[in-house]
Length: 265
Image 1 (tube, rainbow, N blue to C red):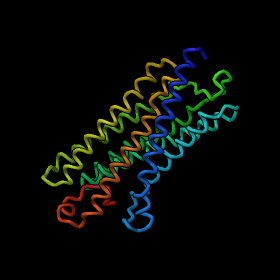
Image 2: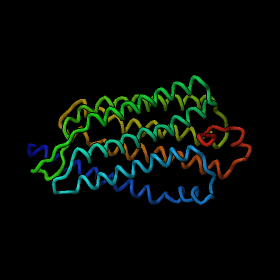
Image 3: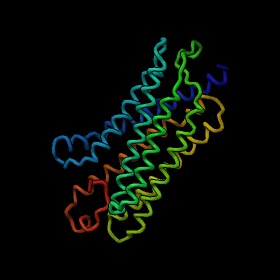
Image 4: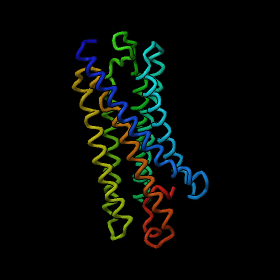
């Protein structure tokens, strides 16, 4: 590894730690929502299990990042990185399933939309499995750390993730526009949809472009952790906001006549 690559690798580690800290803050400051469901203050919906799984997988990924990027004595790098890839990629894939549920609900559980969204999501899961097979890491004595190699092999998985997420977001947003009305719930879904699309573009496009440019392995991974943290945070926050709104105001006429949320699951 050259001096310039070591310098970029150092920047990568700093970015990983920064976004790990962001996720830990997000996880613990919002854990009261889970506690309300566990203690029965809010109703249990099976979609909550999807939400919780995404959060826990991302939390596991953050812990693995902290362990792997801070140990300075040699250890089994490949085992560590495979666990890291599984937790991070499946956290993103499960978070995108919240998007699938919302799209299906907005379209009134239309059979064609359900099939299309589930097929898209299956492609996302396939990309996650492919990433696991591409994982390879070696111990570098100069860096005193595990160095991830062959990272340009992840480019197709990241591209699939981008295409699938944007496709699902477009399906969901078209459904929202189709059911336009003057309710607060519609405005919430409309602005959440815009925010979701913008976050996907700004977090996933850099993560896709860099592996195709393939400057070096560190650059290829530079936006992977920010992508995972921001997508999981955004998906779970939007689910949580909608869940809290519905459980607070239902069966108010405004929401009962306009049942457009994953909470119907």
